[in-house]
Picture 1 (cartoon, rainbow, N blue to C red):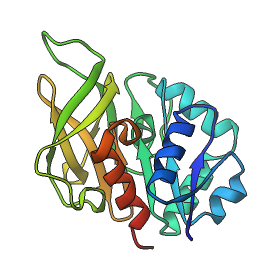
Picture 2 (cartoon, one colour):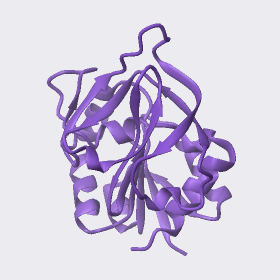
Picture 3 (cartoon, one colour):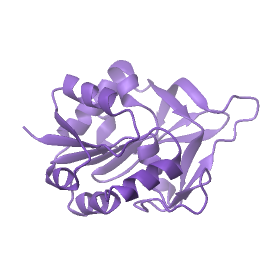
Length: 204
């Protein structure tokens, strides 16, 4: 069975993500060991908290270069919540702190006049482009969000799903085997489990 490594860098909803992946039949290891991440068949980067703190922890544990390595090696990769945001070049939340730069663009504050920020709760996805994560989902799929910032890619064609919260908010991005979601699939009931099952089935 293929092994999925969930990167443990001291931030993120690690164990609920692991339990959800195990529920769909995945073999999962939660690890901060760079070598175990390299050896995994697929890799998940979760994230909860501030962009700057997450990047600081990744860098201090020597895990940022490993992420570049596994992506360059063509391994399926899934970013969740701040794990999506860190794939970009930087964030308005912590100016001056470099992201991983896998996707060009910045993470910006949600502007939603008359609505509360953070954007918290269930919202529907509007699919923008094909993604292996979304195979078999209903046309109207609801997922669970908790965030104040969202990615604004330089190349909008990498956006695979958006949601409406006072305007268009990036909900998912992807290119090839690198896919990421702003919402929490592990908190998104049957839809979220289907997304994680799809990631488990992504071919190498």
